[in-house]
Image (tube, rainbow, N blue to C red; front, top):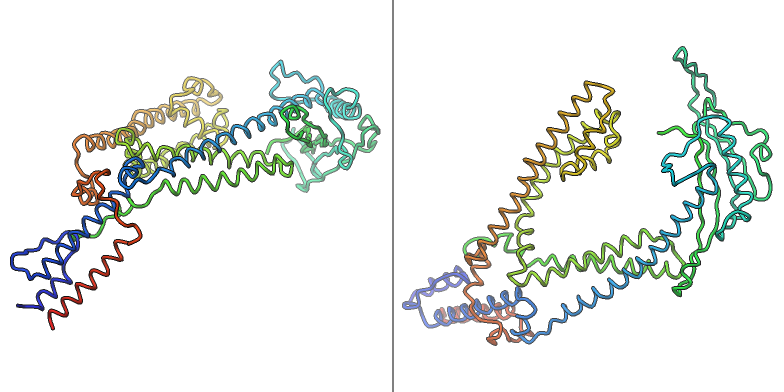
Length: 493
């Protein structure tokens, strides 16, 4: 008997996939094959159990779906907390908007929001002085005219400031100018119940219209929102910083295990749950601080709570994905994701090229192309078929060349993105969907992992999955290998 040959077979054998000829093998070889076969079946059951849904795990080992119950309970608590914070935040936003409208009516002369006054401006020098005096007068008589509970900030009087160039000689007729770019800021303070007009407050305060950059009036008012008291919450106190710009200038198996099979064991849902829990905890801490009137970061808190709640609800899809009739969305998104990312990268380059071109060429002639942000919003709306006619019509015909360019620009963009790029994008998703659907109907296996698990035909309620979890399979495998190795060496001796 050639024991060296048996020893080499011991090291060259593959635990899962080697086929042995047991007719001419020694007894210890037969014993080793049976142990390997038993270990392979054990591994199959263990991996198959890992991918079972909560109901199958309950039938397999009697394991109660406590994670599912905990997830549902967490969703309920977080959603209730979010709704409570949203209602409270809604009262805050409403209170701020109502006070903004109040301040416009109190301090802006001849203001009328019913007439759709989106832009409030003055156009003559006497009107500028009149409007400044009107603001000072209204500020001085605030207690007598306001219907709300507004109060002055004692340590912050009203400030009237103007910014202008130090020296400027401007001659529009000859198209010449000489400007010292150093900016001077000149201010004076106005205390309540003190001086009603700008001339009385600061007799030397003269507006330099020819070299002026801006005139800014700033003051702070305090107020308390009493609407929260009836909901048994502490009333919110507010400091309103009011700024008025009067005049301004705009500025294995024989092969390595593929990564696709390895990633099957990486549960991205756990990462999503961890992120959602972290965001929810931070948002809950901020909410507690806001309710105790320690912080006023409503926007930051709403971002954390809103994003955390969104991720929690998305996590529910994880349990829907365990059932074949409901997991088509998850499988399609996961399979199409790499191709979608590559496609978006290529399409994004073309999209950005149109953004830059539209901004620099059409910006001076079209309101929707004034900034890169508005250009991107406009083009994205065009891709979805929104506001097409208005975009064409709002193009000003001041330059025939630019107007013709705008037509070519818009027609090529709409044709390229709607008829070609958008349809190709939908085709990628649709092709992936039908491929996944065909695999589900035909039962074709798509990976080495699925081929390996398909050999195991044990049902969840067969009782084959109730092994002792305190004994690790891989540790037992190592002990078995060491014993087999010792038996081989002893047989050689």
